[in-house]
Length: 178
Image 1 (cartoon, rainbow, N blue to C red):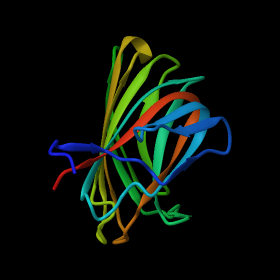
Image 2: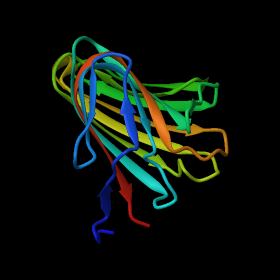
Image 3: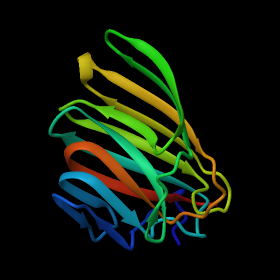
Image 4: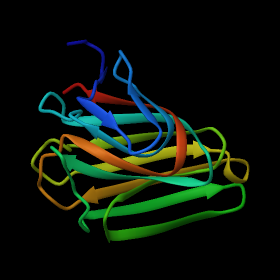
């Protein structure tokens, strides 16, 4: 095991119902025209907390949303709560989405975007928390900062993402050393 703080992880599988999803030799995941993404076998007992980093170009206005997975089952129940703070060159605001079927992650324009997701304890049999930060060039420049919780005490080993528009880019999942 590396002595560094973050360890790039290789999922057991990555797939999408359209476009091309490729797990690269180093463990990162390349996306070409992907709208729905399933990542399996990336959370384990080796790490409590994780960081997901993405850079992407969506084909049209889109938003990334995330659901947790255990084995081959995606939790699509009303178990997710998200708090959102956002700002761009014309607007600053906030809103809350409670008891929803996924976490709201980021909101992307049709230009280059980047985001970081922090997942706290997804493999532990306890409620999972999430924090996301994303930036892009909508209305000049924007930032979304979200936090959320998942109400079930279930162990999850992967996630499902709905991207909202065909997207090309790369995702990497890191485990944070204990």
